[in-house]
Length: 225
Image (tube, rainbow, N blue to C red; front, top):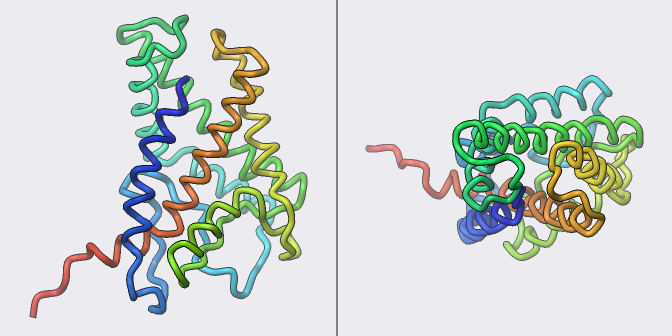
């Protein structure tokens, strides 16, 4: 599957969110939207790191399940599958409705496995927290750097900062498993490239998560007097 298509689209969305940062940063947090742009699942986000409380194993699985089974995940699989079919990224899947079904199934498999590996399985095994803790204030570029860094830094269940093994190992496992259904791309170089693209896609996801409330506040309809 041509995952680089996802990166390009998400980068464009993220650039708009960065530009949307406003003077509302110091206002109290509102209820957390469960979908960014009405599609991208947003269940692993915490509005703040204050009063840190670790998640239980069951709660980590719930985060992964909410992301994996959200209707937005199925919608994304449909979009990614369609783009991959148009680019003929895995020729063995073929074309037509049957081919599209294979592409969508593979795309959903990527999302499903990646969610469970990086948000549940490895966080439980390694005692790490799968949540993204939003900074929510400060200069836009500072928040951007923070969002990017959270791909490689996370908190363990004691609240200490450490390398985000769950993100890297979880996505590595997901890429390795995907070799079972991406028969046209089973080389080591392809695997390494797919891992890099997946991490890049998650970086963009963090940026969207960090700036999404700013965009919501900026474009919320103002009440009429």
